[in-house]
Image (cartoon, rainbow, N blue to C red; front, side):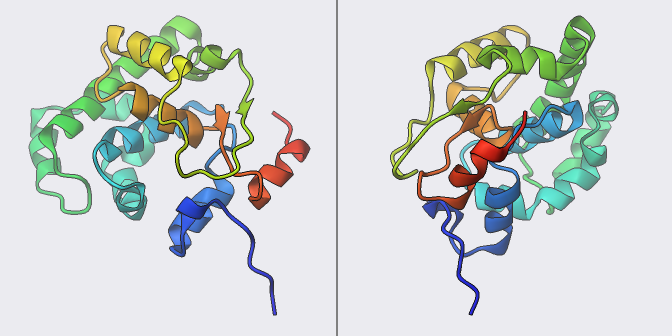
Amino acid sequence: MKKEKIRCAWAGNDEQMKTYHDTVWGVPKRDDRDIFEAIVLDTNQAGLSWKIILHKRDNFAKVYRDFNPKEVARFTEKDVERLMENPGIIRNRLKISSTIKNAQEFLKIQKEFGAFSKYIWSFVGGKTIYNAWTRTTGLPSTSSISDTMSFDLKKRGFKFVGSTICYAFMQGIGMVHDHEVTCFCHKKKKNRKE
């Protein structure tokens, strides 16, 4: 009988959540498309469970052109109306409009820094912050870095980027590694090259 891997408790028994936990959460992402995907999903997650968003991820990818910020930045009010009719995503007008606005601001930062990843990773000095939590329940939902990131993104025109969303985003793209010390992902961090 195959021994079940020990994971962070939040992954639960849902297969998509376990796969996300095992292969995405806490793994450093430097590709701008991957980072934009995380922004789109985290923007839409505000006030909802991550499981809901994860189960709609393929639909988000379809409607947001495989998370291509250049294409999303050109969306019009007509596109907003079209997306409001799509039950496969979160049909919230503010979140849809904010996703388009965030794509536009994302491109401005790309132009300014050469890559959005250079800008976003500068908040942690280009390196993942490794924590050693004994359990993920009760983890902080913000940090001084997510506060600073939130402030700067808002100043640049981004929407739905409060400190809590920024911290979840940092975990999702591996800027922060918050796997429990008993989790197999925490144990394999030493072998990872960034």
